[in-house]
Amino acid sequence: MKSSIFITRKLPDEIVKSLEQHFDIKMWEEEDTPVPRSVLLRETKDVEGIYCLLTDTIDEEVIEGAPHLKVISNMAVGFNNIDIGAAEQRGIVVTNTPGVLTETTADLTFTLLMSTARRIVEASDFLRNGNWDTWSPMLLTGQEIHGSTLGIIGLGRIGEAVARRARGFGMDLLYYNRSRKTEKEEELGIQYRELHELLKESDFVCVMIPYSPHVHHFIGKDELALMNKEAILINTSRGGIVDEEALYEALVNKQIWGAGLDVFEEEPVSADHPLLSLPNVVTLPHIGSASVKTRLQMAQLAADNIIHVLNDKSPLTPVNS
Image (cartoon, rainbow, N blue to C red):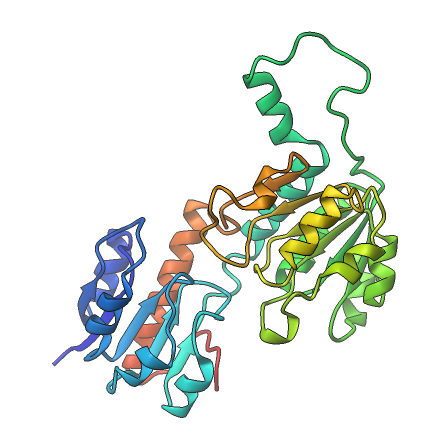
C-alpha cells in the first residue's frame, strides 16, 4: 500500500508524475491561490507527507491533526512557516530546498541593486507616462555602482554569490556575519566589519540573513540612522528582518537614498502598503528564485526529499535533526 501525501499547490506535471510513482496524492489544484486553512486541515489529517510552500502555515494545529505525518517538505530555503519545535516533538522530518536557488537569487539581488541605484522602474514609468519632453543634465540621475562600497549582511551561499558579481563592478566589499569567515576574505576580496561599521561605510547594504525570531527587525530605526544619506538598502532575504515602518520614515525623511525590496513582513502585500507609494523604492513580489530552471529544480528537490524519507532513506536537505 502506497503512502499518501498532500501537495498544497498545483505543481508542474513532471513533478507530480515523479511523486505519483511512489505515493497516493491529494493536491490543491489551484496554481495561484493558497490552499484555504480548512482544506489544509482536512486534507492532511491522514497523510504521511506534506509538500508545502512558504505561503502555507504548518503550525502545531496542522501537525497535531496529522497523527501519521512523517515528513514536511518545504519548497523554499526559508522555513519560518513551519513549527519546527512541534515537528521535532513528533519526530517529523522537515526539509527545505537550499543550494539550487543560490545563483538565481544572487542575480535578482544584483538586478534589484542596479534597478534601485539607476532608477530603472521610475525612468520606465516616466517614459511610458509621456513625461519625456526633453533631455536635461540631471534628469533621473541615480547612484554610481562601479567603485562604490557594498556591505553584505550574512555571508552565506547567496551572499557569497552576490559578492562575486559585485567584484565584476569593481566594488569594495564588506561583510558582517555571525561568525567571521576568514577563508572567504581572500577568496572573495572582502573585508569583515562589525555591523555598525558596515552600515556607516557602505553605499549599498544587502540583507542576506535567514529569518528567525532572533533577527526580527534586525535592521530598524537605529541601524538605518547609521547609514549615509546616499545609501541604498536591498533586502532579498526575508520580510520581518527589516522594520518596514522605520524604513519608510528613513526614506521619507531622506536619511537614506533608496531601497530595493523583494520581500515583506506580511505577504502578499496590499496595494496600499506605504512603501509602495515611494518613488525611491523598487518593490518586487518575492521573485528571488523565479527562473523556470530554478523553480523546477526546487520543486524536484522538495519531491525527492519526500520520496527519500517515506522510503526510509535519509533526507537530502534536512532542516531538523
